[in-house]
Length: 295
Ligand SMILES: C[S@@+](CC[C@H](N)C(=O)[O-])C[C@H]1O[C@@H](n2cnc3c(N)ncnc32)[C@H](O)[C@@H]1O
Image (cartoon, rainbow, N blue to C red; front, top):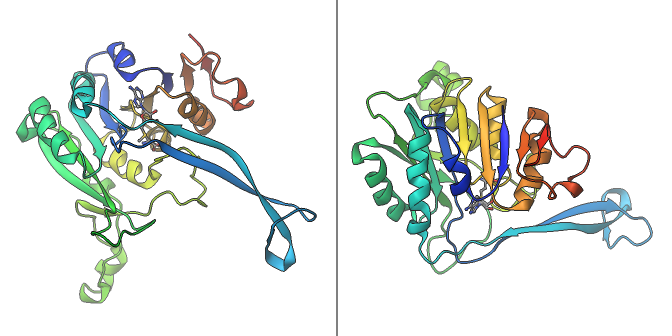
């Protein structure tokens, strides 16, 4: 059964069986030292009091729907992650894959740390997710990428479905001929993908939401249909939606009530049971979740 579990992930992980997951992807807070905040706005038509004029002179005003935020500062980030990395390894199947999504402030510390947890030979790739959006500093090169580290439980036997890799256009199609150009090429370890744009349909309003395209590529290539995919820093539930769309099962964990509310709405079409969230889903609306199983 697909599950969204409310609680501290260390407590929840202790209840998951050994070797139950084909894939673990986590995107912990990046330790930026700031609160991560997202204000959700809605534009409504208001002929009388609208403060903006749009198409054909219609008047509009902007309504603030709400603010979601979570703290992102740790005294000792690696000490926070250590028992969670160990649990991730314990719940992974012998041919399972671990993905850690971080930014350049912590990536090098995490890589050394994960080399110790999984073994240096288990390190498979450092994937760079490059995007190009938002403000650009004039004082250094604008930092516009995240790092995704892939470790295999067994570097000699792991899931990598080459045929499931999506194809992308050649930069210079004229150089490769029409047939190859039409087929496109497989991506390298640098993935160009725009962030979830404020106007896109997948936007949930949750801060630091990651694009479905990134999670779909990881899950499609690194797991099998029917596998259990676990994300224990789940946020808006991108991993769950990607997993369900690809015929995988999911278990998601987050300790923030806003994340649980967002996931309850987003993952209702996939029949997710919302576990341990009694009392926090009251205002999530009638479509608050599939099977709601408060504990
Ligand atoms: C960077 S966000 C994840 C965003 C997610 N990948 C998405 O696409 O929406 C990190 C999440 O970790 C959660 N979190 C932080 N510490 C946690 C803990 N100890 N247990 C469970 N969740 C935690 C936060 O509430 C936040 O929602």
